[in-house]
Length: 117
Image (tube, rainbow, N blue to C red; front, top):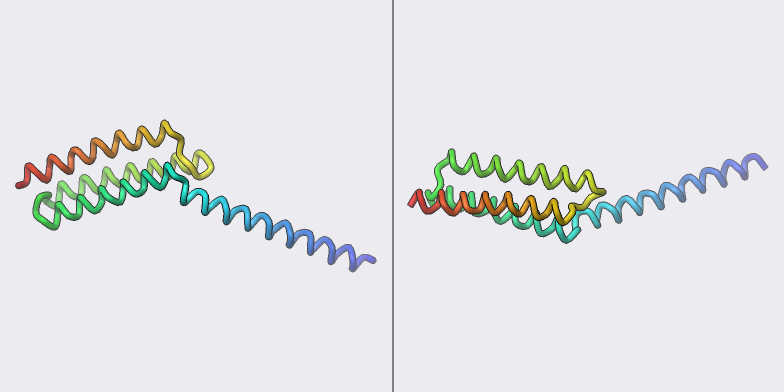
């Protein structure tokens, strides 16, 4: 009788663990594919490519590119911190704030690329 209870307890614990793991996996998937995060991260990646392209073509010097990459990393860190504070997603207000920061960085890339020509 005691062995049956022990086996039942172990099975119950394993079942709960499996459900918790499945829930966590689903949450991770949702977090990584949340529309606002996806949009922000795609834009961050595009800005990174623009910086690298400007450096490669000589439109940005190494110092300008390094500064822009630093700003880009700060925005990326902010996005991650915002997502961590809100169970894996960012709010509309946070997305708008990040977009304002990306707009400013984008203008800098554009200005630096054309000043360097």
